[in-house]
Figure 1 (cartoon, rainbow, N blue to C red):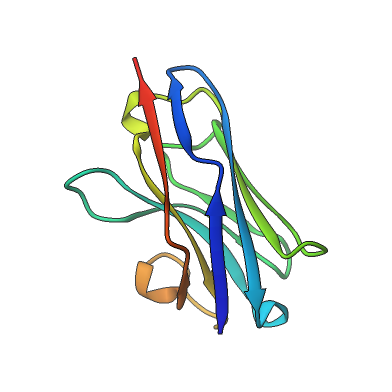
Figure 2 (cartoon, rainbow, N blue to C red):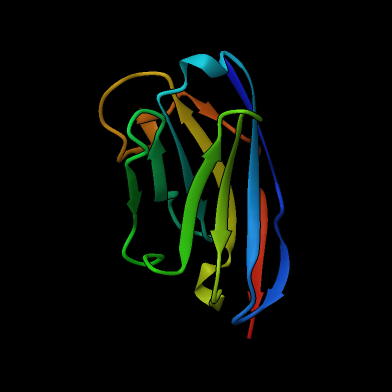
Length: 124
């Protein structure tokens, strides 16, 4: 399996930037895709970005398109989420997830490995 640890969350003001990191260990050579999900208070977890390790194809939710950038560094087994122009509605717990299976990547159940989450709070 793969173990994931996120870092980089915090409290920022609207318009600020943050960069989240996700360090993977274990079967990192089998990772097919990395994704970032977020879960605002009282809401369901939603996919906001993903990147496949073959081809580097990326996906972004409409709510973050143009503001967030997902990337990865295979040399350090790390994934990143650069978040710019943050808005109060971006406030949520952010989770890194990894899939070892070729296929769909648009549902939480498509990802078998999850980090513990990191809180991002954006104030007005």
